[in-house]
Every structure is written in C-alpha cells, then in structure tokens.
Amino acid sequence: MGKKDRLDKIKEIIVSFNISSQDELLNVLKTSGFDLTQATLSRDLKQLKVAKIPTVSGYRYSLSSKVVEYGRAKSNTKSTSRIPGGILSIDFTGTMGVIKTSPGFASALAWSIDNYADNRILGTIAGDDTIFLALNEKSSRREVLSLLSELFPEIKAEKTT
Image (cartoon, one colour):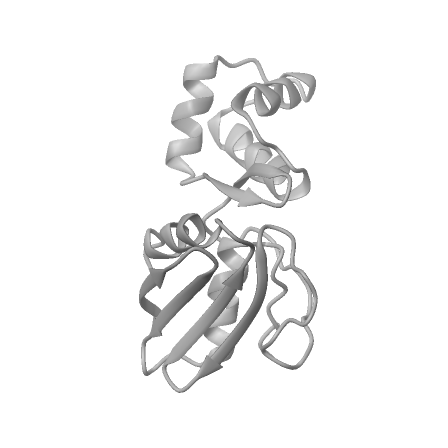
C-alpha cells in the first residue's frame, strides 16, 4: 500500500471516527494493515491539513476539506439544538454571520475558520462563546454553510441542486 492509500485511509478514519490523538490514529492505521512511524503520520496529518478541534468531550481531529457529502440540513439557517463540537447555533444577516458556541470554544473554532484558505469568509472575531463572521458579499448563506460543514462535519450543509 502506497502513500495515496495511506492518506485516503487517514481521511476515512478521521471522518468516520472520533480520533483524538496521533497514538489512537496510528493504532487504527496499524490495525488496518499500514506500517508507519509516528513521524510519518505527523507529516501526513500536516499534508492533509488536519487540525484538532474542540468538542464537548475534549478534542478530535478534523479535515480542513470536504471528503464526503454529509447529508441535508434543516431548511432554516439556525440550529435550534446543540451541534456536537461546541457549536450551538449559526445565524446570518446581510454579509455578517454569528456562531454561538459553548463557553471557551469560540477562539479555537474561529482559528480553524481563519486558517482555512477560502474567500467565502473574509475573517472572524471571537469572544468566549461567540464568533462574528465577515462574509464575502458575493457568498450566499448556503455557500458559507457548505464551507462551515467542510470544516466542522457535525454541521450538515444543504446539498446544492
């Protein structure tokens, strides 16, 4: 099995399981028949732009790009129930968005948004439990939700038709 197979397996594992450490990921990879060192895994995670994001129960790895389609969300843009990973709700008005998070999560989540190379969101300002999003005026709410679902798979963005 080559590097491409290994990278594909890493993406599959991260999307499918709640992986919180390199040791845990390394063990799953070895169980799946991949023989690699922690240093190689570390380089692979960097190449895939994998980040640790906060969740209600600690931290987990997350991909910075969409690997699979995650399904259809409710038709409104506000979540009324708790989304795993610390996000409580998302609202939009004009070219602004506001994400409400669990206390202490906003800064880390905003960092993930800011460090994702995309022009749909121009930037963020984070407090303790609130993130302000400055949206590109050419971006639709659906496009921004799609971006956020790429970063945070717990968010189910509507598929475009």
